Length: 122
Image (tube, rainbow, N blue to C red):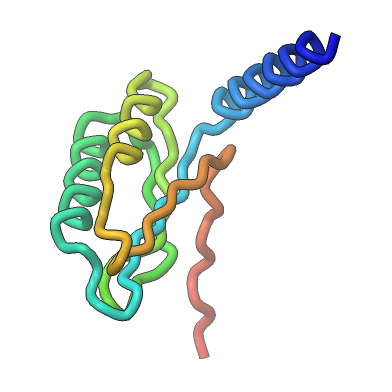
């Protein structure tokens, strides 16, 4: 009986994760240096993957939220409704493994990118 409950909980978690992934039409991307400079090879690869996705119509919207002092950035990429390659794009980003001693790298699925408001005039 205990094994059945564990199996049902596991199936429930898988279904919830699948539903959340289906709702996630955007991904927040954070790659920043942690004192030493950001891992240049990984940073270059992240930029190439994003650029390719933009050029191929996979991403509808790309917003940079800020830049790191040691290199890198925080941004959000939102899926295009006209292209089905967003899941593969996120999978490709997840395959990038920067040096953990120099670089913080996270991907956070979200339903949509948060718009950035323009700075107010003084």
